[in-house]
Length: 193
Image 1: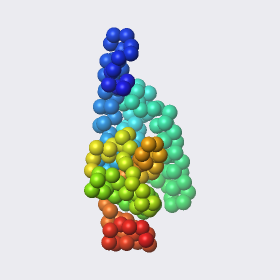
Image 2: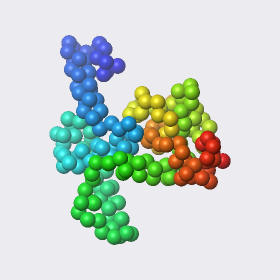
Image 3: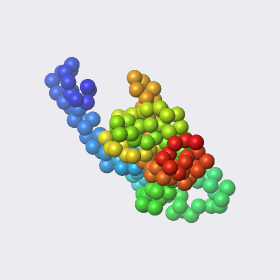
Image 4: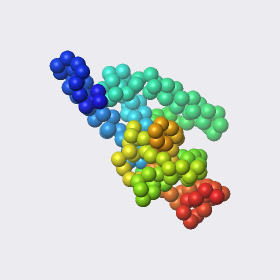
């Protein structure tokens, strides 16, 4: 309601707040990915890194500087762990970069391999069926995939309110489930075995 600008304040206050929210939403929308919330987060991190995590840039894009700084620290820790386990990264490899098509597919396939038990497929009703639990779930309105009709998704979070919502979604190819988790998914339709 606050974003819509409906009554309750001095003249112009609600309209200004609505305009500010609208501008922030527009700034955030430029990072949105058709492949879901996690790929969108990668876009945000790459852009924030390019902007050197500048506080003004974060505010202009409706992003929390401390959260992005925390993500940057985690990324540095992961790079350090990689260096210990596999070998040192080149300076170029340490820099986050935009995902090309191959990297986007690779990321989504890796997520599928790790989170295959959190897959959901779109039903003819428009709702999704969580394959492991056989629960009917809906896409949370905060997801970049909320208005899209993606056939199959992975979810990171199940939120129980008056509905069962799934959040932090990644669009995947349903055939990846039987390929990457053959012990759990039959090749004929995605049911968990």
